[in-house]
Length: 78
Image (cartoon, rainbow, N blue to C red):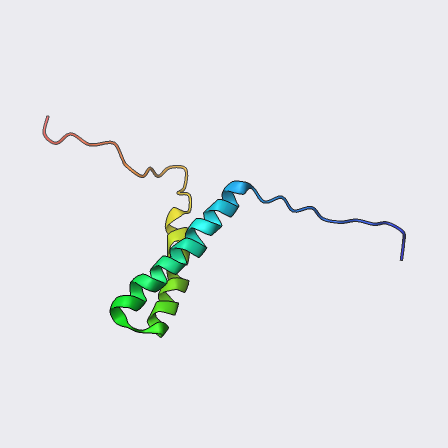
């Protein structure tokens, strides 16, 4: 082997770390307790705390360029 020493530097933006903490840790824990307390089921609470953050991230994913969240209102009539 050669004497070439290479390494990879991975830069993670602080905003992504904050998003991870907010969605996965806080959101997952909150969903766990919100499901566990009324249903008294650890199994359903675990499933909800796993699926919930995935659904939140899916809903926050950026929309294609042509779509807007709030389309312009249309006039009816004249």
